[in-house]
Length: 454
Image (cartoon, rainbow, N blue to C red; front, side):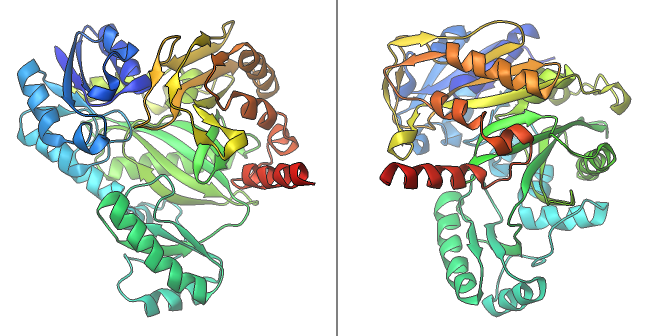
């Protein structure tokens, strides 16, 4: 096992990794930007090293500064968390070349799965269901037009690198496809340094279904069942739950096992999430693979009892998975809501500033993953998420009610947060019925906007 790990991240995920390291008897070193000086999570680290000013491109995305911090702190491994450099194969390669274990997949496995075009090719080989569309990144727009006509509109243009909804355009006819390809290329190039895009069939009323997997360096890989992440706004997840409500058990087992097979074939070590869209007939189509720990990993931890972060560290150190597929079982239901410092009434405007009031909820089955507290000043430089509230209960109905109670207890101010929004979404009839799709939040927001103007 490692003696010292450097954490190349910030906020709640940095704190989550620090806690996992300490439980394993590992010293935790955190890098931080000047904007994060005094961040509460840094108090829990064994050492903190400033690597630059607030902008990410001058700190958390500076590979050479992170490597230098690992060298001066004598770390043996680097944990990237999520976001920033977590899915950067070049960073993983530099870590390896510099003598540090990258806590995540090898650069080869990351390239095989992180590039969505390569990933789809491997998925077809292993029998994982994928959308019909272009086989490779688009070189000739006329070929894309031909493919779109064959699979029928609507289609979606997607960046082969990155995620978060950037480099994506929906096209309902040829004119929208032509303009969408150019727009997606430009956005992808700016966001990820890679303007490659591809086209695939678009589902109008899909649900977002993702399978948590984890593999080791000895050829073993298992799935930890699935999560439903259909509560989204502009491709950004708001609510995640496990297991996905209303899914046929046989279809669940089939798609979950196909995800584990894909991970094994890629010789993947560490945590990975295989994302799917599911249509009304519960047919599944793979979207992509996220080659890192996910923001919503706690809901899976709550229903399986598997500590995903600790297991990821163990397998990076060369240990075999301590369980097999037959050891993994679903226990109850869990739901996570992301607590973002945003004002939903003002177009979800980010809310940087001082938190004066912070009172977290408690009770059976309630978990808070957050770096925030009273007196913490939210910097304007980063993602607006300041925490996650996760609730576990024996069944979905009880879980929803328990979560509503916890949200009512949660007090954060004077900055605005998404807490009031979550209370409303949890009572939305589509969500309560488990029949919600990836567009229901945006449809509802439009409805209330029209009502407010009337």
